[in-house]
Image (cartoon, rainbow, N blue to C red; front, side, top):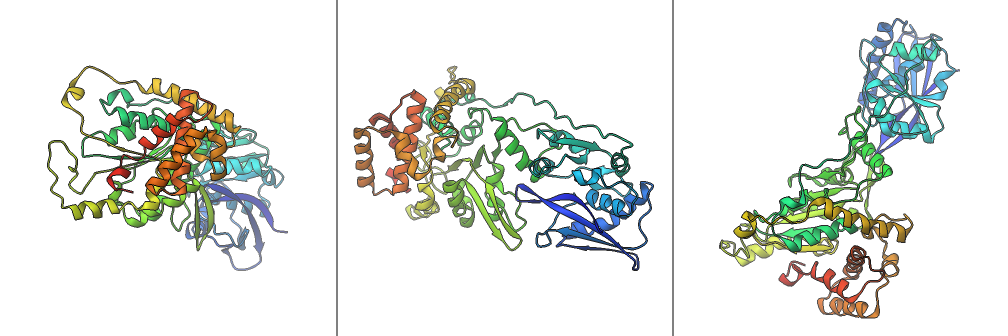
Length: 505
């Protein structure tokens, strides 16, 4: 009977269990792999052969057939080196099989038999717990990351020889210990920003409700400074959010395996030359920028300069807060609950509306530039603020604005009210579904009448109406009000229509 040990492969941000079946046949010596292995998996045959010999074992002088099940799932990565090696040793009766059946094995092997780290270790440990394994055997360098998952044994090994001794019960591999997490520290602070009172209010509302924000203004007015300070006022991540973000970044290879869980919400700022696949994910089904920004902020500077395909592909994630990738290699659903902050100049030269610098762009050029932001895309942005240059007296004065810590306290209180109201079914007002918005708002008749008047006179869509109610609900939460009043709706309209009045949407 063929021997079976278990490894795993990554699909999106999740790990999928893979059975590694090994059979030895009386044929000419050869290693045959079946089950849709990628080139990186096929190449493991030579690494495994050298690692087994270097570890003091004998490589079978037979035909080694390695079947990776399920056979219709493509397997990628170097994490199969260890389970393949263990499977060969078990089938060759060079190590005992009892323990091997109870653990999930993950790791890349060097030619000398040492274990090297792999990406996605946290996802593998998550899978091992969900599938009921006793534990997971990982490279020692990855053990602190895998140990973030509670309720599962994480065994840290440095070599194939140690793993073999563990399976023969001659050695107890040490248990992985998660690295202590330092409290989040920010180099930037909201007090660094001078002036821009209206933009600061919009930033606080965006943080309190998870809303999307568009900042328009000439170069140097503080758009990038504002966006960079949004993470400093967002609520601290819960343990579940921190583990989810850590898993995503680990799968993408952006998280050091010996580091603790992420403590600071992600802030992703891709260059405007990025492709649509770079934003949402490509044919390899790895997470794109919108997923890397999950539970955090996606900042798109020079928004109109992004390729049209990259801009328009954001419609789905902004509405559904997830990405569904369907490619030839498979289909995955990736989380994408982020706050978008987009920054744009008012025209190609950037000086339209500047109090002292003349704009050199023809009217037709300005209209073409603004038309790059389509109506359906603009509909999905809740807050839109026009910024003007900061006056020298504000820039050089001694008066400082509120610090990020003070604003964050108000934001966290507003988020607590939202969690209590929604019983943790959603984390913020921006995540409300269409059928939940009106019930959550609890708006009085005058507030609804004002909203209806605005929608009728402005020919706005139903989506805009729902998003205005969400913003009004956030404004009420910041004040501690139980119901949405007229002044909340009026302020929500004011935080959105700055650019509507100038014909952007």
